[in-house]
Image 1 (cartoon, helix red, strand yellow):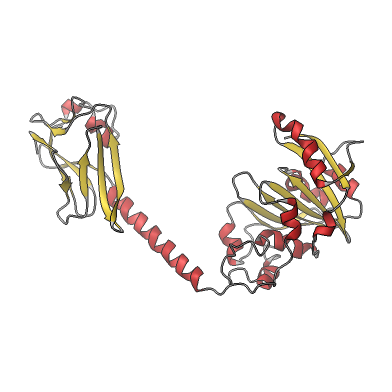
Image 2 (cartoon, rainbow, N blue to C red):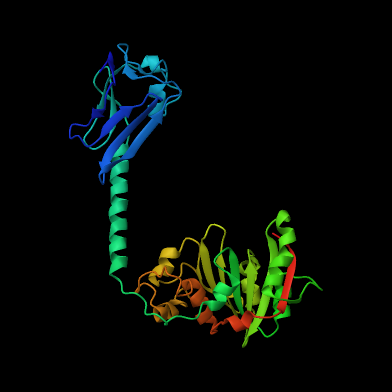
Length: 338
């Protein structure tokens, strides 16, 4: 009330919410949670000192009279032109400022935000319960991941599987110029690309022939993503990309046309084994998803299986990759930066 100092906590009538003001100038609204407390709302004043509501109706932190502006976000407001008659904490968690007529001048909106967060938490708890109720995928039912671990493809990379018989030609279609393609081991390719790191992420790729497919591995590269449609002309191409933020995408092209694609925002679709978000045949991957039990089994976390999108890429291409496919030298190239 006017003329009072917030010497101790100000509670909502139901005792659930508590407003405090520290000596450092920070005002906080907190609520209990799991034996502790969580922050609901906070504002900070650069001036230390107690929070007061003066007899003139001006909120102050120490000698700072800009508190009303910070609380409301109305920075063009003249704080001396508004007389606050009381600061109220409501049961739902809103901080309310009443003017001299007892009318509501400002409401913090924290109650609506609390309701939104509570809804999200309930939905998350429901998803966790549903996930925990799923069976685990039986051991040994997936494709081997020894090659995946050998190449250490857990970081940013692009894996492209192309129907083609000439690895060198595929690399040239990716952008490797004349004379750039030469036999290299995967380790030698990584070593050759390091001097270019100061210029930016290097364009480099290794292409291994596996049956009637060419498997292209680009550490940190994106050429397969950008040129998959072109690479698929006269056949097919499947490309899986993992970016620097940990988001992955998966696409299937046939003779230059996009059949199905899961983008970086489609994790939920892929996890449920649902149709892709775009493409001429958005259900193209679905039979393969059903084959490996996407959406049926618990999400695998112990590293026994390939990442689902990598396994889907291999199944769509009809290849079972092994360590032996990537041992020794293969056509490879380092051809610039992006």
